[in-house]
Image (cartoon, rainbow, N blue to C red; front, side, top):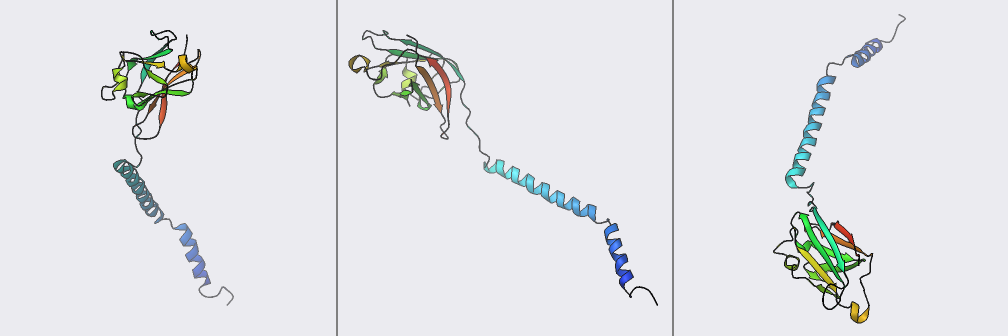
Length: 180
């Protein structure tokens, strides 16, 4: 009786058959893949339906013309003109203008020591009209002559900034340079 203990040979055969038998592997992997694809697809569709992915407001596209004159009106005040030359209509409440880093216009009104100087800037003063091609904003430095503070200098950068109405994002949509 020299041989293996009873049942040992039988156990070895069962282990060999277990590793060699691959009949059930394909259906199990197939079911797992189908469940994973279904879960991912449901998550993507749910994100679109619920708006989780969100949508970003598009920055309006426009071209601008910048002009500056230090003797534009009878008072001899420095004046900057910004003209919408083409592109999309803009809401003046969403625009701001700075000259040399100082904000001179924001949300349909001038800032600080600056005031409107032109007769063609109704769209810039009233947000219900909308700024379209040909609309010009003329801003003058009211304090230059009396105090010399905040004088608009030749070579300063003029920046038009658009602010999103649905978020806190901003974009520079036009730049120019003061050239007297």
